[in-house]
Length: 110
Picture 1 (spheres, rainbow, N blue to C red):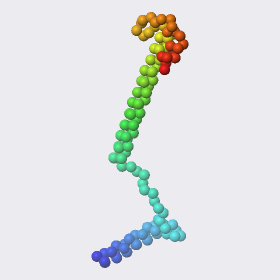
Picture 2 (cartoon, one colour):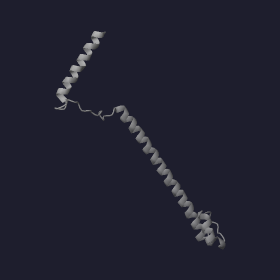
Picture 3 (cartoon, rainbow, N blue to C red):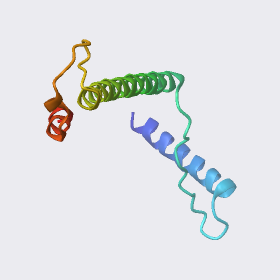
Picture 4 (cartoon, one colour):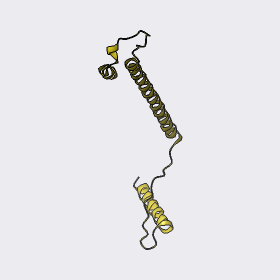
């Protein structure tokens, strides 16, 4: 086993010297540190794509829900304003004159 280790050590040294001659700096022979490749596996790409699609779908649903809730709030506010200024409730019944006062307008909008 000791002979194998010596042979392997000599082979590594010979490979390093050969690489330094081919790719090393001219004066020192030092090799530059290379960065790892930035490529991504297909499995990782699919996983990230699924996550991004899921987040976009959730964002779309939340946006639609917010818009719907905003529409509901506007409809209820419009109904309250219509009741205050026109003197009619939404069922078609006529309300009394005191309902047209400004206090009614403020109560229904809150």
